[in-house]
Image (cartoon, rainbow, N blue to C red):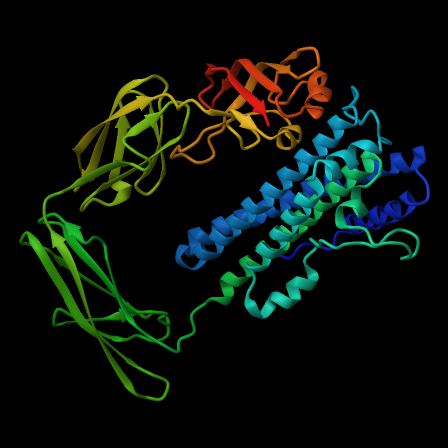
Length: 511
C-alpha cells in the first residue's frame, strides 16, 4: 500500500517552491493570491492523504481479524505513529490560527483579512519563540518516526522521509549572514505565506506518516515464520471446566506445515493429524487440577526424527464469574465506561450482560461499554448459555458519579504566580482534568471574565465567550510587568457529559 505518485501532489510541491522564491523578489497581490491558492490545494491534498492513511489503518484492523498475534505489534506501532502525527498536525493548526488572529482574523468568506501582514508571523514565531519550539518538535517527530523502521532500512528512510527540518541560507544566492531556521521561514513574511508554509509542514507530516505506516503494514508479511525451528503447542477450548463438560485439545507444532502430518500421542492414545493439525477430545470428570500430556514426533529435512514431549494443565470445577471495571469500581456519566466480564468454563460468545440503570454495548469478547446518565448506583447482571440453558452467573453493584471538576490553568501554570514572559505568550484559559484514570477526557472553557490590574494603567476587563483571551485586552497582556495582577471570574466550563459548570475564581500575580 505504497503512497501513490499523485501528479497533483507534485504540482503543489513545485508551485510552493516557485512562490517561495518569488516571495524574495516581490509581494504583489497576485503572489499573495497565489499563496492562497497553493494553501488551499495543500489542504485538499492533506485531506486526500488522510483518507488514504485511514484506509491503511482499516487494513491493519483486517489483518488483526486474520492473525492478531502476527499483526498486533505492527498495528500498535502504527497507532503510535498516528497519535504522534496527529499531535504535531494539531500543533501546526494552532500556530496557523494564532497567526491568523494576530494578523486581524478572517473575513466573512473565511479568508485572511490581512494576507500581507508581515508583523504577525514574526511576532508569533520569533518574538513569542514558537518557531524554535516548532523546529524542535518537527525534529523530534522525524527522529521518532525513524524508530519505527527496521534498522537495515533506516538510512533509506532517512533520505526519503518527506519531513525535513533544514536551515536555509540568506536570500541573494547564498551571500550574506546565514539565518536560523525560524528567521529563514517566518521573518517578515506575509501572513498568508506563513500559513502556507505551516500547511506544507502538515503535508510533509501526512506523507511521512503514510510512508511509515505503509512500511509497518508491509512488515507483517515479512515476519512469517520459516520452518527451521519447531515446537509443539497445545490449545484447549478452556482451562476451567465444569464437571460433565467436554475438553477439546488441539495439538500441533509451531509454524506447522499443512503438507506434513506429525505423529501425535495424547494421554497414551494416538491422534490422527490432518493438514498438520491433530485434535483430541475427552469428557472431563472429577473436580480439581488435571493434566493432559503426550508427545509429537516430526522428521526434519535431513531425515532425523525429533521427539517433542508436552504437558498442559487444566482445572475442573464449578462455574466462576468475574465482573470488573477496567478503570475502577465507578461508572462516570457522559463516558463510555469499559467493563470486562468473564465466566469460568463458559465461552465468551455464550456470555451476556445487562444493567438496570443505563445501557451496555458489547465491544468484543468479554468486553462491554457502559453508558449511564444519572448519579446513584447500577447493578450489572451476567447470564451464560450452559448446555442450551440460560443461567444467571452473578451480579455486581457499581457507583455512578459525575466526572470530577477540572483545574484552571494559563499555559501549564495553575497560579497564583506566573512570570510575565510566560503569561504573554499564552492564548487563553485552559480547563485540564488532572489525575483522572480515563485518557482523552477534555473540558471546554465556555466563558469567563478577565480583569487586569496593571500598575500605572487603567483597570482593563472584558468578557470571553471561548477559551481564548479577548482581543480587546491583548495589548494590555503584552505589556504586563511584574506586580500586575490578572483576575478570572464568572468562569464556566463544559465537560463530555454536557454539563456546564461554574468554576471558582482564579488569580495570577505576575512576577
